[in-house]
Amino acid sequence: MATDRRVERVASLIKREVSLMLISDIKDDRVGAGMVSVTDVNVSGDLQHAKIFVSIYGSDEARAETMEGLQAATGYIRRELGHRVRLRRTPEVIFLEDRSIERGTRILTLLNQISEERKQHNPDADEEDMDLNESEISETEA
Image (cartoon, rainbow, N blue to C red; front, side):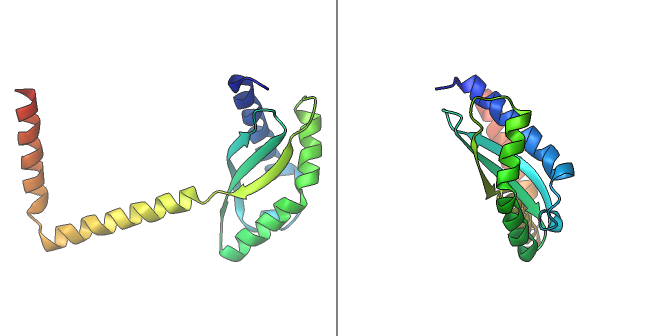
């Protein structure tokens, strides 16, 4: 079993190498259908499995097409990782779509909408909230 530090180093190396491969080495047009970036890599403790999380910018069709291209290129990517990252055994590679950026953007949009609605319904609420927060702060300091 590898140490946590080694697992993190291997994950970082895999992330860097796969990112470079996505930029220049993979010739499959499906991978270029959406803008792809590697957001994270999780490597198992025994260094046998690597989950590569990718963020894909584009339509749902482009995402699906890009994921198909990545699945098809898995063997090539694993072979290249074996050459570039010196390990006894090259980990099995699994691509997973990471939609956290999309979810984060959606949450920020919803929070901004709520904020705008509150301002429209009660324009003085922000000033009252500020006054309450300042009085709460001064009470805790005393």
